[in-house]
Every structure is written in C-alpha cells, then in structure tokens.
Length: 121
Picture 1 (cartoon, rainbow, N blue to C red):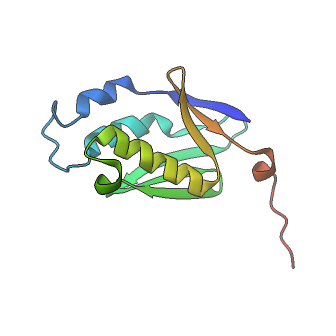
Picture 2 (picture 1 turned 120 degrees about the vertical axis):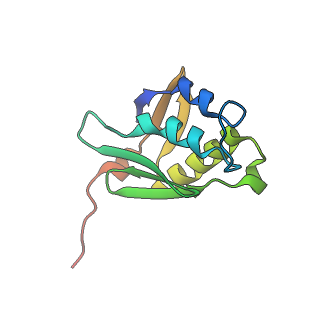
C-alpha cells in the first residue's frame, strides 16, 4: 500500500553547502530541512517520525524503527545523494519503502507488516 507522506521540501536546497556556511561535509543543515516535513501522522493514526542524530538518520513508522548513516565515502561528496542513501537504509531497516514520486514523499507499507504481531506465551 502506497501512502503519500508529505510534499518534498524544495526550500531545503537553499541550505546546501554552497549557499550556507555548513562545514559538516555531509550537509546537516540540508538534511534537517529536508526531513522536517516527514514528521506526520498517517490517516490511520500511525505516527511517522524522522530525525537526525549526529550522522544517523532515524525513521520510525508506528512501532517500526530503522536508521541509516550519512556516509560520505560510500555515497560521494554530494549531500543530496548521502541523504537519499541514508533515508533508503533507514526505510529498509524499518521494513517500509520510501520514494519520491511527483514531488511528494511516498511510503510503501506492506499489509502483512501492519497487522498486530501475535505474542506467543
């Protein structure tokens, strides 16, 4: 099931290193601005949270959580590519899909994953 989470924050591009004095090397100001709109609540009440903790991007969808790292050596020096790779890593670890379609962030949820887990005694 695909769910539109939020529109892509195009104003975040103004926070890329050539425009601002971000000396982090990974574009933390851009990352913060890009992921800020991703903190939302889905129509069914499921909370979606995305935050940066140092070089780690943490994505939570309901009770599922995953994280990804802003890796300069693997993704190259482009902060946009680093953030995209970290978001994909975090989404994969959380068991969801994350993509950009028609200017919006789209979550792909599996129906099986959304069912309550049975707790065995």
